[in-house]
Length: 244
Ligand SMILES: Nc1ncnc2c1ncn2[C@@H]1O[C@H](COP(=O)(O)OP(=O)(O)OP(=O)(O)O)[C@@H](O)[C@H]1O
Ligand SMILES: [Mg+2]
Image (cartoon, rainbow, N blue to C red; front, side, top):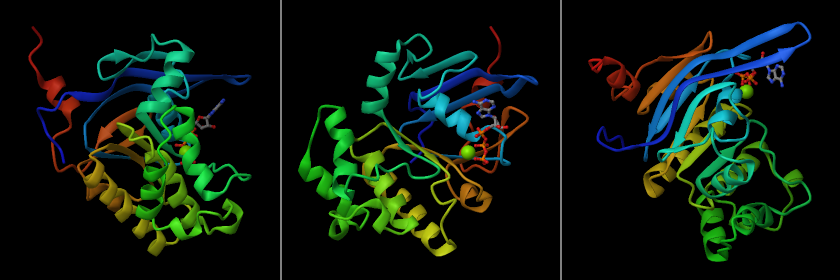
């Protein structure tokens, strides 16, 4: 799905994130450079605690960077107010969280419908279509507690995709699943990427899975190191340009 001439959808330049703690400043992200284009599947791997969730939250506008620039379709997210950021999040970003984060008191159907109501674009036929694609339409009246981990993750994926977001940010979407269910979820993400043309930025521990797709990076010591990729990382191309 990669296309070198496609304009960047989401880009980060020199992004830093520090946490101030009683024991001193924790430098989690030191200098993040990343460009994600339309329809790409980009993977980020890295050791526990290296800052993967922190990075995903910052790129998705759920948290603020300490320094640096983040652009969505050329618009500077750092300059946006909380209100503008919330609007951008609900319309252009889909999130699949590390531990599903479904609403326990809502049914499967209601969990997927909710983001469409928040974004003021309720579309019940599309909610049905999404639940069919993740093969859970027959479980629509069930509550999250009645589903297995893999089923809950599929609901979370339907919920993340229901508003046709431009970018889907997935934090360890297969981290809590057995290998077979994990493989089904990965295949599903791949199918949805092909069908809908959305960009996916996926955090995973599975280096083998990451290496099978467009591009992968390892987050280490606060920077992204380009890993096995089918296409050159756009940041590398940018960095290799002669300085005028
Ligand atoms: N609010 C906070 N205050 C202080 N430190 C924090 C805060 N949030 C996260 N951290 C620290 O930042 C580091 C990165 O956390 P993060 O959750 O991003 O790691 P991760 O790479 O997603 O790990 P995992 O693979 O275990 O999910 C950790 O050392 C964590 O303890
Ligand atoms: Mg994490």
